[in-house]
Length: 316
Image (tube, rainbow, N blue to C red):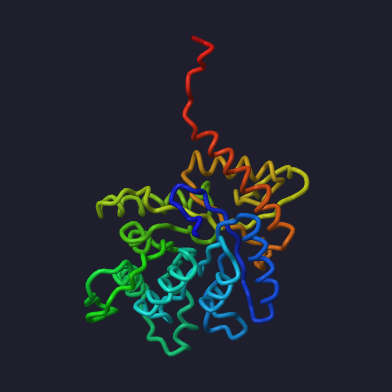
């Protein structure tokens, strides 16, 4: 069953699998499943011939694991019509016991997207389509009467929803309009450009999400923040865990635990996805330390801080 409960601090790792990387992808995901990690991510670039199709890979990996959830970070929405995307993710959720997250983006590399025969959208129209798509996926999930939806970009008529709840929707929103859409309709946010909780990007962007959520009648806390986090796990503590620009570099297990525990308790972080600083897949040794040492220690520290303090009977 899914480990992605709203109260759990999520730990995952990122992959960039090509056709030649299939054995490594399977080794890493099966290792992560054994080690108790929560999810793995892969990118969705269907215009790159050597890359695995994101949703084919997700389905295959979920079939070989028992606990690990998967998601495309983020789905290339312009090439995947949302009504069909709803069928895909609800089917994956039903077959995997809820182990799927829908990562959503408005589309970034429009030159390549257009090369696939998809009509080009302006940035503003792309964000409008992105918000419509999230709404439509949720309407076509969870059962109920047939749906008719007449949006500016997407339309369906008398389509029955799948009798399966929609998966959590996490976005990679960057601009103000997209951030506001995230606040209104999404369940999680992944700050762009691997920005972390101390970055100016996070400090200026998160309030836009919170204000839009509140204006839509939602509790802003319903929108989780999950950080993409490149970094090394070293045998010894590093003299500095951040570079001159303040970006996280990594450090020893103890340094990671201290930093991530602070991110959860002081900055509201809900999860972390580890990436290799070299932009490849995380190596097996680093992944083992992430799953076996860092993640359990952070969860333990967070749980300890969350426990209510009770009076000591002996002091009465």
